[in-house]
Image (cartoon, rainbow, N blue to C red; front, side):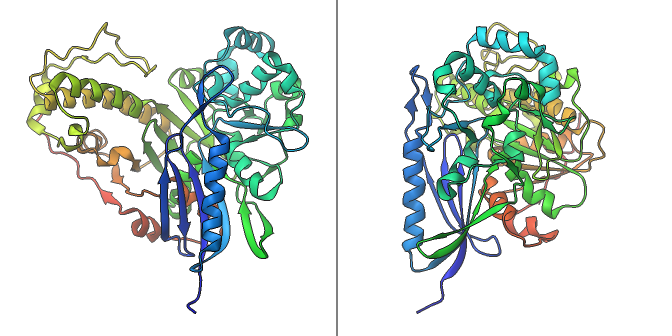
Length: 462
């Protein structure tokens, strides 16, 4: 019988796609599965992740691999979206739905929080978390305490989603840096400890002991020894392969629903102005801060492209074929103006009452204009994340690396940097598999796994 292949399993849980990977010992992808699970609703009828369905999907995939004669499972880890808590009682029962971070929070509870603990700006600056209700998952605990005290009293531990998935396999409750540090309102970055409000509200008692992100728990399952990771927040995980293999300072632009500029080489404290520009900090696996700025680019792009398709009578998907047109771009730049009313972006820009598409004869022309306007905001957020750090390299990964207009505009506006596109459908899964392995990697790693391409700056006759 042929020898079994040793593999690490990673469950990579996004808001939309749930992904399941197997990696071999050299981090080569052996298996990849994607699924979308139907949502459920919480007690207010607000759509949210169906935790039961997610658990079943994870269990089914795990058992199928264990039963598969080809593989020997050596380790498991989890990367998931952040800002989501699972609350457990003394017996380990789940007490509430997994509240969706887009669920609006009661204004009177927010008012009470700032009245007790300091102004919105002060809390945002100290916790490096632009204030955004449920997206600051620590506030969810405050909300439960004052809105549902009968449930709050029953909580023994609150686990961020990656650590809850780990707990399903180990029965051990832990906290780890990357989940605590992602816009949760929980961590005081200057103090390198939970924020004072967490202690004042006695919420620290519900947060399990903090362990390093690289920690793992050895367990035996069906008489097999398996190493179980403690989970990692997906943005920090996506950054990890770059940090481990690149020595020179860089900025990673991670594109998708959110466009997030991540700068692991900027450890300045955030200023009031940073907070107003939607800057925040993430945490590296060693607890060091990563300066980041983000905007809801992919979300806005989808909204606007759907409108363009409807207006010009194109099928959704037509936009994916649009290539950068230099003459069109130069013509639009001659009389630069704002034509799109953005709906989901809160960054400062000139507001117009409604989108004007009458000015554009074709879909392609309107599409180029849309990309110009989104790029203006993108430039702004990247410069905020770079701050005063000495960066020469910009890596771009995620969905927009396939967008020719976006990539050409990036190479044009950042021509004084080495701009590289990296293609890896592995995203945050690879980081989750690397963090629990002790294997050293070198400079060639990204080249092998990420099909890196250097973008050539455009030579425009402006």
